[in-house]
Image 1 (cartoon, rainbow, N blue to C red):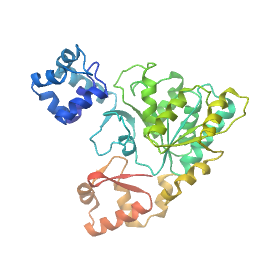
Image 2: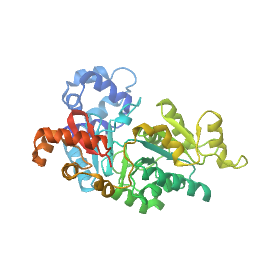
Image 3: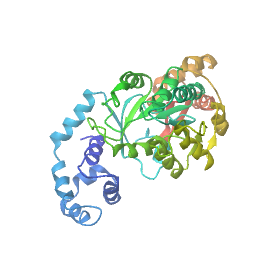
Image 4: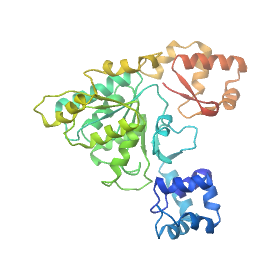
Length: 365
């Protein structure tokens, strides 16, 4: 099996959450080592909390190669990709949180390491005003190269996604179900557009149906992918506030749009402002918090190409949204190594590409 398949096996064992998997990894470091470990040693590890009586039998039953191969084939047929926590392209912001998912399933583009990433969340049953505000923030931020993250719910989430996509920007939707399932079904057109122009991600495996318990887990990923969270409309007790709690625990910034004091959907945002969230009325109120990260503001990659010298453009065209390693870049570019290194520095300073660990490079814009 491939390394990815061992991760799919380990994270797919019935009843095994992150806490149990982490204990096994502390002893064996890699999923393959756990798969091949002596069963007596595994049984000994599972004899104490948090493991329960049935865990060992589930562990043994899960080691069915035919089932693992079928899952891998099913994902391939559905054009579902995987990023594991030890991959070079695992999102660095998400990796830094307390409880990052070991496996991310995704459809669409690989998640770029953008200069700034902002989550926009709020009420599903938002007002017409809230919908306009969410869409406008999504659009204005995306125009500046900010990645827009949300949960593809009706209302604020959907409008924030549309604002980014319709203005040539990038957006990622974090799902509380498998990425091959459009939920809610009313957002089918948005789901398809995100796959074309952005990314759909989830820690839940293919065909996993949405359930109430999935969404709080989903919310920690929304905030984990971001530098800050913007709340547009929310009741006093709202699911959006769970995302805010996660953001605060993760050291993220919190922004809120103020509303009328007598409106139920303004109570949550107004309370956040009382507690210290930054009051914002336009995208610039958010952007000023990250102005040191912006070397170049542009709307699309076709626009940015006008600012390249010929050799810069040639190298930029080789670097795509999928990471490329330095050796492959040298082979494809057919340029002197010194010139490639010089051009890479120029492209990074322009904010066009980013260097990942182990000398991999990826487009940012």
